[in-house]
Image: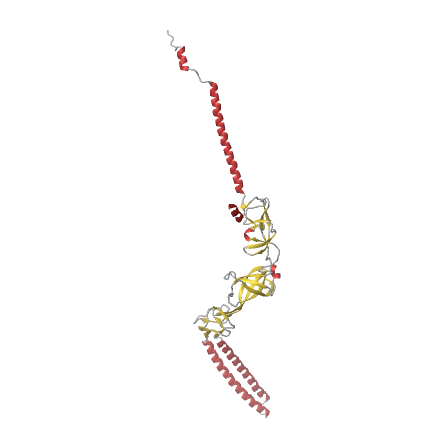
Amino acid sequence: MHDISPPEESYDIYAGPGPDSRKLKRIGIGVAAVALLVVAGGAAMRAHSVNQLRATSAQAAVPTVSVLSPTADGDGGTLVLPGNVQAYNSAPIYARTNGYVRRWLVDIGDHVAAGQTLAVLDAPEVDQQLAQARADYQTAIANQRLAASTERRWSAMLAKDAVSKQEADEKSGDLAAKSALSNASLANVRRLQALQGFTRLSAPFAGVVTSRSAQIGALVVSGTAASQPLFTVSDVTRMRIYVRVPQGYSASVHPGQAAKLTLPEFPGRTFDATMTRSAQAVDAQSGAVLVELQAANPDGALKPGAFAQVSFAGGGPKGTGVTLPGSAILYSNNGPAAVVVGADNHVTVKPVAIVRDEGSTVVVSGITGADRVIDSPPDSIRSGDQVKVQRAAAKGAANAK
């Protein structure tokens, strides 16, 4: 048998010389090192991004607030309260007799003089009752005259002993009774004449007609509490202003004290008033004392029923606190408070007492003028929280330049 194995030279040609194992190891180690560098770089970049995000989130979690400085209660002696303006005299005019409105002569806004006729009523029933009363009076007069003549005759006969004393006394008593009936009839006539006079409604004093409900042909009935006044006449040459002063300030106001009035329809204008009297009693429901002021009204600017703000000079307690805008007060279950920022930008929630509420501003005690108070503090803020103080707009503009 022949040997078919390839020759040794042929084997060397196919196998050839193999790659160096040390070179391959070096290449593998290099590739692994590069991969490790890539992974480490990515991890470092990711860690940097996370740290940067955490820092940004922590910085954003600190709220930015605007602060203000409380101002001293410079006019702490001024007490501002709502008031109600009323006419010095105001009279509702009712019908005192039953009838129908024949005509009305004045309307709202008209100035009337004392005694001027406002309206005329038709009262036919009263006219007929007056005619009957006059006839009854004439009958009573006739009976009285007859009784007087009879009494004189019987008195003359009694002097001659022609009649008894009893009969003469009866005639005298009859004259007295007839005289009383005559007087009663006369009083009834005068009563009906007065009712007939009430068919003319007159102004009780000079003033302005502020209401009118009289209509021609309308039935008017006297003596009903639910009836509406036909007219209202108000004397507006001088006005009364009624103010309810809280009990805590009632000792600060007194008769003769000056005050200023402001009305919403006259912005920027003030009216002088003087306190004239006090009720000297605290109302149990409102806890306030009712006081009256008076003010001249030469041009009619003050109107009955108007709302006014009344400022009493020297009516409030002085030096009892500082002034803050109402938006700086934080209200909670523990009462009103102010949020004060310290030098390290950490806050302290300080309880305050409201001395006086003036609407847009309040006077409080519990803080000083040196405190930095947050304006419009968030409800979630607590003592110890850190904040960033927003710089004033003027400083920001200066820095921008």
